[in-house]
Image 1: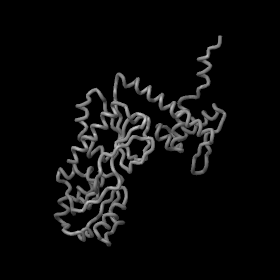
Image 2: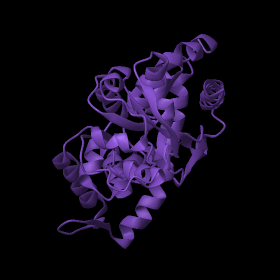
Image 3: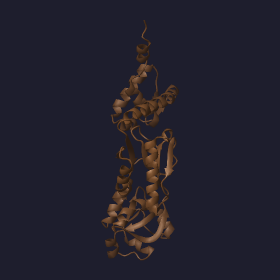
Length: 302
């Protein structure tokens, strides 16, 4: 008698190969797929080769600096993506029935200065839910499979994500009281005597210079930091004047480590959003965190 179950499973490709293909097809990059899967680029390439040999077709067109899906590869990606997502969902549901956890991805500065100091309240409200925090600096709108909910800093235009703005914020001109005692800033022209501290880009100080009407402010001068918390610490230690998001700076302002230099605020072109997969909008744990963080943000703004 034919065992149809055995025959069916023999036609299934290796799961690792499918995972590597789905990730590489989504990013159109073996390197990014390797980062997401915590393997080497060579391992991803090997898994793709195994899958192509198994299927007997080419899935990718490899160019010098680009990776493209073949037409068959595109169709296969569209077919298997929802299947893998469903497999991840049902597996996650089974695993969390006994041990529920919520993995939250946050930018490092937001985690340090805003979320972590308030997280004990969420833990007290939901003692049966284990919170796992991981720090990332992504705002490209790609949630990895091991992330339930994330905080993104951007413009909110992410496909396939449920995104809600936490607040609309301003950029503040800040410095340490000690620095200002040595080199006071009584008028906008006094900024010319100080080092400017930049976060992510020099464009924000350029916009502030225009708003202030200070034409000869040297925007190209001063250190550039990739993380707000490092820029804030540089300002706390008197290394210059920083232009920073009001939410992230509030903790240092409350401590008296930083103060507003000039009463000029600039609208931050980016905002913080709480985001999750659009297919999981009814997940009770995600709903609980979303409602909590939006309430906490409102409280902190009042």
